[in-house]
Picture 1 (cartoon, rainbow, N blue to C red):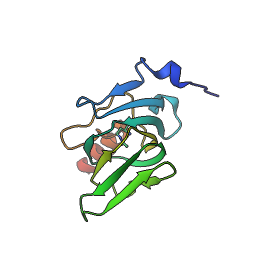
Picture 2 (picture 1 turned 60 degrees about the vertical axis):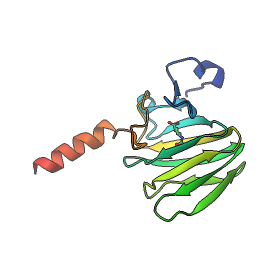
Picture 3 (picture 1 turned 90 degrees about the vertical axis):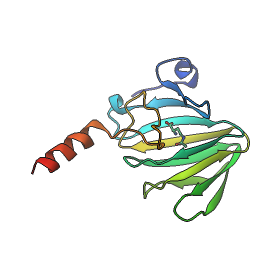
Length: 141
Ligand code: 9YT
């Protein structure tokens, strides 16, 4: 069994700040924990807008505090987010995430995040190494 507290994670290697200051991610469960997913608490800052497109991951996000919204890029559809709202990016949905107040989100990623990932210019996290290996093998066939 693994037990971790927020206090242990804040200020450690498992706490990652967005380069633009829009969010901070506390990564409780990572790839190295061999759970098959990673599990994070993310604070989305009040007044922020973040372009996100997890081309290589599925993410579930559950809001436990604060208010904001998510806009689907493909359709322009906007969904309000507040305590008790969950969204699942099961289609690798490109989106804008906006915080009206500081939002406390609980997030799970499959495949798991390794640890220090940051969004690239498109709001993407790099593929899990096993995915990259998989692609290399496929491309060489
Ligand atoms: C909701 C979301 O995807 N925010 C960006 C940070 C991400 N949740 C993470 O790395 O924890």
